[in-house]
Image (cartoon, rainbow, N blue to C red; front, top):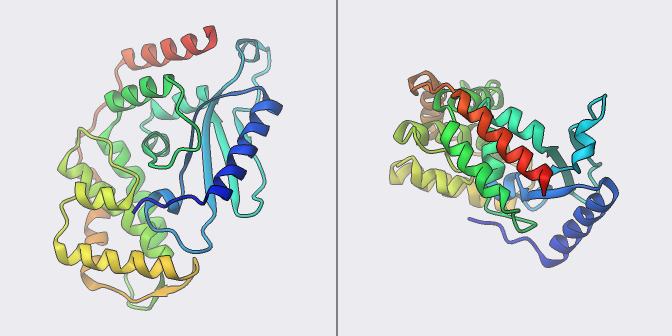
Length: 261
């Protein structure tokens, strides 16, 4: 399920992006939704988690003291806008940071991608480390589930998803370690080849979250709990792929091309 952003909300987000662009003097390479609306399980009161990657004018990078490499704004009217400088983005991407991968594949875009975004995504495909990404998702899932997964009490549906999505990402990686897993839950379900019975349970949870507030409780599914436990423990099954020195050279080439434009 790809959430349709209401025109009034989209207009407000685009206006705030334009303000940041003018005040900060940045150029957007991409601006996307990164939260539950893009993940495929929004609640009626979900925030709009807008994330962007930007580049500044060349001289900004030539100062003696490095400037701050993030832009953060306070949450207002459920809209949360934050972004990373391209140099920070490349630094994390070269470490197979799964957040960068997700932003690149978000199904909800608030700006047309800069042409450089396609080059960045191609580099991400080339260098990502399946085991590193799997460990990222395993830690994410375990942190979300550590207080409830071993019991049988009711759990907020939001927390269910915060463990389930990482588990499915690991499962998708095990099925195809040469492909970065999707950020969207429904795409992950297709990529991870789950049984129809499990898919039905997940669909029920998605519908429950669509109708309840963020912390509304959900009933437990034993088969789903077992899948989460199993997949979160299998990150080490993935092959490890160390980035080649050429990856840094390729990132540098894109970075310098951006500064020359």
